[in-house]
Image (cartoon, rainbow, N blue to C red; front, top):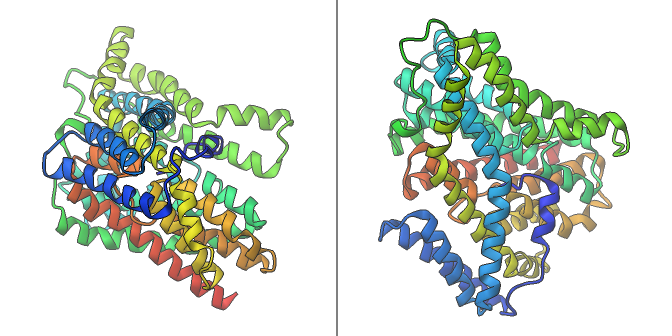
Length: 465
């Protein structure tokens, strides 16, 4: 899954917790993943416990010191909850405000009135892509989920028919388009031009998101025909509400964090001076934490007070929003712990060692290395940075356009087949109320389609440019 900031990557660059050889480490990775899958699918163990046990099993199979394995797991769990957890909590509060005030109803009723039937998946992928342009994947998820679940429920759509386009829009933006951290770091490592990379990224993203979103969702809905989970669906506000927020006020509240983060991204690109006063201000207000916190505070007035909520009811709404996400936080945190255990065991370096002597075209090499690291560690950003670092010497003699395409190829590889070592896998699973096989058949396959299809378009562009 994604890291929430480039700075978080510093935690990944640590000494390996084991001196095991590559063969033993490879076996340990497979064994650790197998333990997690078996505990969840066969023994029906809670994913939090399975991920914890799987992390310890991985360390044991790799011959690591148990104390170091525990330290890696708890460090990864802590950093994931510290980053993603606060955003999930703020997103849950905003979602509850949207639901209880009638704001979510207003959005859903308007969408259903304007788009219906075959147009609905296209409307969802467009909305998610716009929202996902400046947002981290996790922030986009917590903003989109209430709308996705309500549209699926009220419009009597298959959850996958609506959810997959939204997820595809968010994921494509994250993997291919600056100012997301992975592409930005790859641009710097490869010496690519940001503007050219952004332009080519949009060219690749449009057909990719169409194929992985609305088109694939037809098949995903057949493979996994489920309804939106009742426990996660925001309920209609009680009948005693005399009024509800306007569509404009509700939409403005939802888009507030999007706008704040987009302003930060634009200022970072245009000004590009960390000492500049304007950039320092936008760096603060455009951070995911502050942007979502601002939306929550504004929402208390534009949503809660607009619906006639008293101060006591506002406080009650906030309190009720936090209880349902406790399980999600633990599972996502444990997924981050397992990822960190893999990284600290030296799996990323193992993949780099194997790939040193591969004699294949640079674009395909960058994609394959990113795929291997993504599969092993579960981190798209770690995969992007590691692969970009390895193929950086090849970019020195490339044209501006091909250096940009190499950045995109690495980003595409970093999205390949999200599975049990990815905290994002568990985030989607829990929000959508799926089991592990269902999540693999929908979310994991969708991520693979994004990776492969975008690579195909990147290679086509390399023949033209």
